[in-house]
Length: 174
Image (cartoon, rainbow, N blue to C red; front, top):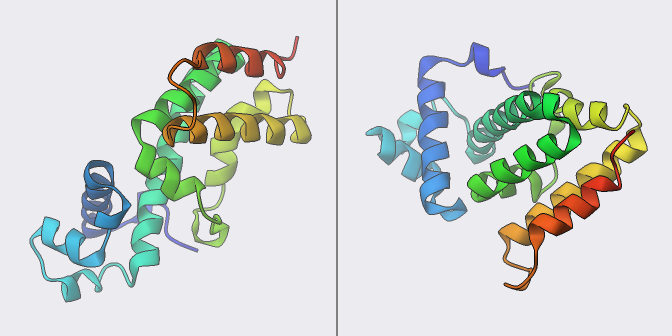
């Protein structure tokens, strides 16, 4: 299991920050060991002393992403399911490359800090009364909507705010 964000070395934090910046600014093709090393002003072999491979590098960024989205959803929880949905959508649209990195491939749960995935899912689960099937369906709806929006799959005339409101209303617990 990978170390939690609290136990990363200062250099690993710097590496994660540089990798995240490259991903956000230039997209997934820029997220290479060589580019991250260059952004830090070091040689690639020096980077391997702190991060053993690209999978570990990506995992540092994914851990950061899960931590960040968990905080956003937790902050939105007092506004109920509509607020949580707005926060999820806003976060994903603000960080499309990061969202893809954490969601468009199999999740390597064994590389995440214990409890991080649960923390990020808890606000959604709570909003549907901890019904596991409803929570999964809600996440599938939100993920599908945001993925299609990120990938430009809706027509320009689509009222996505209305589609989100309609979809979320189906999950609202009275």
